[in-house]
Image (cartoon, rainbow, N blue to C red; front, side, top):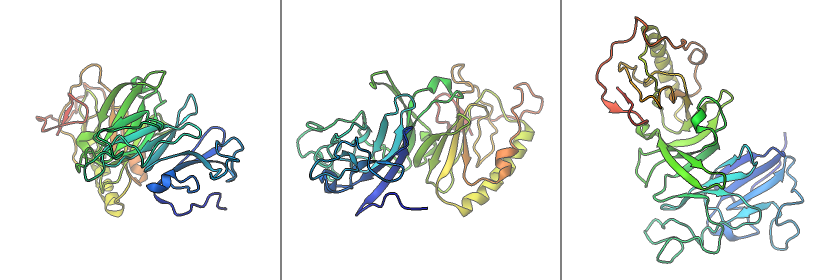
Length: 342
């Protein structure tokens, strides 16, 4: 094992990605150093997998610039994602008081921080020190949030388990508008020209700080939080059988032990199988979904789970099974509108 990159005077979040051409992308954050071409802070770097610099990097041979740099002017680089079709690289960048961004990385471009931003400084004035938000003179963001959601990781969904979401961009958020307990997952539909058509917020009712989202090899979306324990819910048109409740009760007890040992990076799985429930409180409400949502989404908490949590989940039972759990009135709402659970 050897070091292929050693940072110099870097601070804050660092994000990594590999593109299909075996190039390593490293995104860093900074304040004033983001505009210094001889600093690696506030930059996205592009390297070969042995740490050397590709000959086609935009600043190779340019006096006064580090050759590792691909783009500059970044504040806080929270995640990198590679587009599954184009191979282009996207960066999620946390703004100050507002102004979170998703940036499409273009060679040699300057994204403006700290000279411009679509957000305000924490005392209140606009970051760009003018009377309105502006990105004039610098590469504009592809997407932005005002107020901020404190963006985290991001991914493009390519699986078959959630076919209506195929091709959509998913972006995690730690909190909305600086308010604790307002983390969420945003789903963004883009057209072929990368213009935003629709934005939907998911999982807000879980009140979790969502740190990352990734697609697994099973076609599901896995969402990581940094809370001590992540609640879970799942959506279907049927109730749990007694056998399923028994298994999930055991899983819940095991999960409670896991949560006591590890307080960070709980995973939440978005799937497409069934049953409204919370891992921390077994379901007793039979849920009836609108037809267009039935079987659309499942969320399960996973974090260093014992093997039984992955292997002992019973197969779904028919909706007319004779041993369905007795339902009771719902008491709170689920993250998907129109779906309730206890």
